[in-house]
Length: 153
Image (cartoon, rainbow, N blue to C red; front, side, top):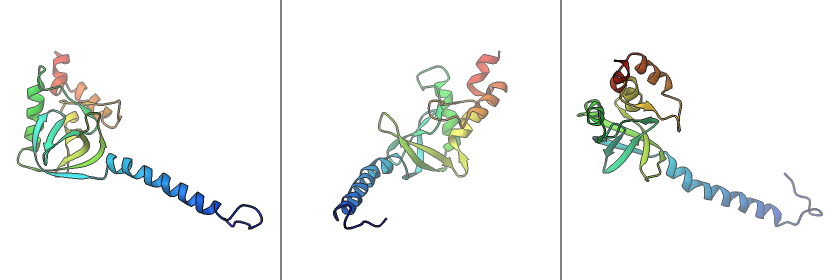
């Protein structure tokens, strides 16, 4: 865009550039906080949808599992523990939850832990945040896998 000296004052392009730059700088902390980080290491399983990795509690993206203190909660956590046992875990942080925990896509090698928990019937698609695992959940329900077996008998 070319500014005419007779029209707009000369300082307007500078002001616009500063406003745009200020807007971009304000957006950067939020974007950096919501994703881009990778947390890696050996995992300690907290429950069926949370692990501790590199000293941080990480919530598995897109799923909800029974809490440890509820019926089947310990069994749910054990399933995740067996998937992660002795394996190097990599979590790509995509958000921060309301408890200030990183929420991430976590992998044991190529195995997506969220998808596998749902596929085996030990977690449900957390449809407040995604629809990604709905088909896996529906199949696990039909096949009476994991926690869904209680509804089939």
